[in-house]
Amino acid sequence: MTDVQANEDGRNGKHFGTNSSHRFQSEAHALSAAGEINPYSCPACKSENTQRLSTAYMSGLSHFSAVTSGFGWARAPIVGGAWTTGISQTQLSQVVAPPARRKYARGFLLLFLGPIIGGAPFAILEHLHGPSTTYELLAASVVILLEIGAVASLLRAVAYNKRVWPELFQQWRSCVMCLRCGQVFRP
Ligand SMILES: [Zn+2]
Image (cartoon, rainbow, N blue to C red; front, side, top):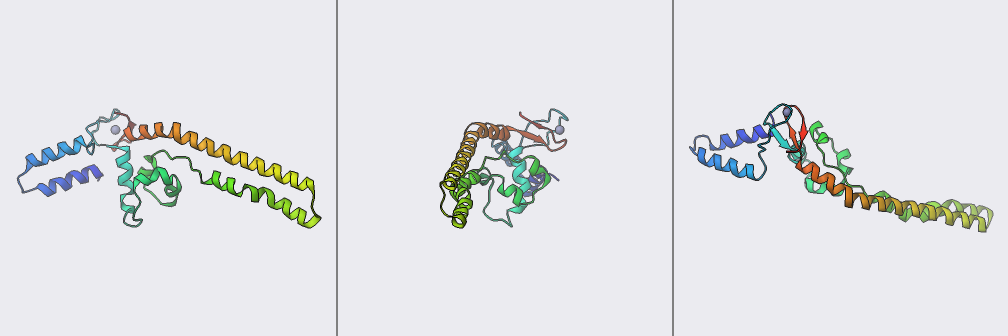
């Protein structure tokens, strides 16, 4: 049973016997306006059993919320791929996952550890063989190269998150998935 069906049943059940079919209709209309019910029909199989990718993604994760309290989808772009790999997800939610932002952690790590990674081997060599300008020059060159690499990687990530990611994310948000045949389309 899909979540859409489950919702429908839940609402039907709630109002069953209270003779409030009118209320149910207006409620359904309000939900439809809020985008919770998709009136879009699948271009491939004409099924109206469709769901926004974002909703499908949420429902795929919903049963994890009891275990891992306090994570919402709003955190997904911030935390990025970290928890999509850390938490086992249903296949559906893996398919419909939002585009991930580039992370800065690795770039910053390299930026801060660069002087240590680059300098340490030559510090050891100097310790063993005595002070040498060659070692110092080599150490400085390696550190500079590592720092350039770190800055370049951070700038690439910033550019991606600023220009590419928002576009991908908007596309993802506007996409609808057919729950019958799996077709993803933009209404
Ligand atoms: Zn379909």
